[in-house]
Amino acid sequence: MAEIQGGYSIQRRMYAIGIRPGKKIMKVSSQLWRGPVTVKVDNFQVAIGFGMASRIIVELL
Amino acid sequence: MKKILLMGNPNVGKSAIFSRLTGARVVISNYPGTTVEFMQGHIRLRGEEALVIDVPGTYTIKPTNKAEEVAVQMLGRDGDIVINVVDATNLERNLYLTLQLIESGIPMVIALNMWDDTKHCGIEINLEKLKAILDVPVIPTCGLSGEGIKELVESLSKAKPREKKISSAEKRWQEIGKIIGEIQKLHHRHHTFLDSLQDLSIKPSTGIPIAIAVLFLSFQIIRFIGEGLISYLFEPLFKNLWAPLMLKLSSILDPGTFLHQILIGKLIENQIDFGQSFGLLTTGLFVPLAMVLPYIFSFYIVLGLLEDAGYLPRLAVLVDNIMHHLGLHGYAIIPMMLGLGCNVPGALATRLLEGRREKFIAATLMAIAIPCMAQTAMIIGLVGERGGGYVAIIFSTLFLVLVLKGLLLNKLLKGRSPEILIEIPPYRSPQFKAVIKKLWMRIRGFLTVAVSYVLLGILFINILYTLKIIEFSARFFSPILTGIWGLPREAISALIVGFLRKDVAVGMLGPLNLTTKQLIIGSTVLAIYFPCIATFIVLIRELGIKDMVKSALLMILTAIIVGGLMNLIL
Image 1: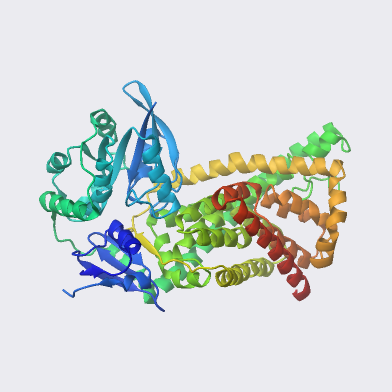
Image 2 (image 1 turned 90 degrees about the vertical axis):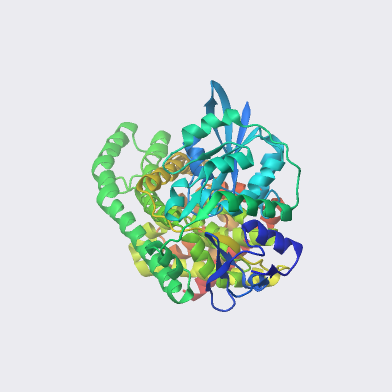
């Protein structure tokens, strides 16, 4: 994962929950109509609202 | 007295350890945000009594919602020692809070919880090295089985403050990266059955059918167990054993006396009618024990299983989209589901939501359109006698009200619903003992609180009748009762008791000889018009007086409109 765009508060929440630059991140599922995206990082899964998820910029591995 | 705080990320098992340490009864579930309020218990530390406090989970010491705020306040105010509960299977993320706690200078020990899970997750942790690097006691534990708890208690005396500079987020993550590199090894592991189920239940193509199946099955099980207990156990017990006893008591007390009126109530054709007599020992016991308890029992079995398996957050993700139209996000499903059991824990769980707007919407929607299980059981019992379809009308109406009200509030209130950001816990197979323990805790709560409120309600209504207050208010409110809702004005007694207990209130519609239409309108209005006193008090605390007044006005207005419309349409 390359970076999280967006304001300080979004970054802070994402970092705290364990999503931050340099981590391997895998998409598990996404819901219809721009619903939340579920991703797997390390050993845990997080559901992230579509808008927030679209701020996560990744590099494909 | 020394104060020991249990702190850690959400859903790492703090409450399980708390309950092991203190023997206190607390709700333990498999979803982040089970504990939204701190709990206290006592332990003995080398002869000295100490207070243990179970703190809501938090990812950092900078809170993002009310539950986390509670956690951080606790740390600042009155901690002497922290037990930092850490999920051993997610060490890296958990260590962030650990470092922050160390920096805060509070003496600390680490409970490396879910230790038993690391093996099949393919995680190998070098315990000795971790202890050495962090320079605090680290005890591997398993909260559910109780492993390591004794060692944890012993280690508390070794907790000492560590001097460490406050550093920045970036530096902390760098430090964590280094620590993890030194102490943790990952091994490859195969996809298990639970992993596949996890993926299937969150992908929309398979997840939505699974959700429908789960909810349908839950509903069927609740009904099957509830109905079974009523018709094969409780009703026969009351009819065959209790009724003859009460008849004897009735003849001793002599019908017509005040004491007879209070204890036995009215005799219907010289017999006890548990639905209509309304004495403390007749209807007062029959309603909570034979009509409500069976459904409370069956509902909490099913809810407990769903909670412990870890299904609820997945449901939250699947319904997130829909909930956004109602001004909420998916996680608001948690207060709603808890509210189906009892509105009080539901109201408390609105703390999981981020802002004032969401809390207001969630609390209002729940109080208006989510009947608690006690009320539901009474509706099933009373209206169900006239036909299952009529019960369906009531619940469809309530559901429709929930949706319309949500759409409306979302339009009217400024702002928009925030996006969901929640951790999805791994599935765990619910443990029989844990499920039973939680069930018993909830039933005990019902029996001690609810039964006394039911008895109080019936006593109260008998006194109001004697003092003619009912008659007075019946006349006063008859424009609404009769004019708009088409109910007899005696129904005011049900509305008055509804402030105390909704189940008794529905029960009071029984003796009024209502038509089916009136019964349907009465039950629906009783669900909507106002929360019971217990919920009301919690809501005032959670929303503040100002928002609660607004919310209450909405409830009354909705009840008048919905009841009026039903009177016109049905």
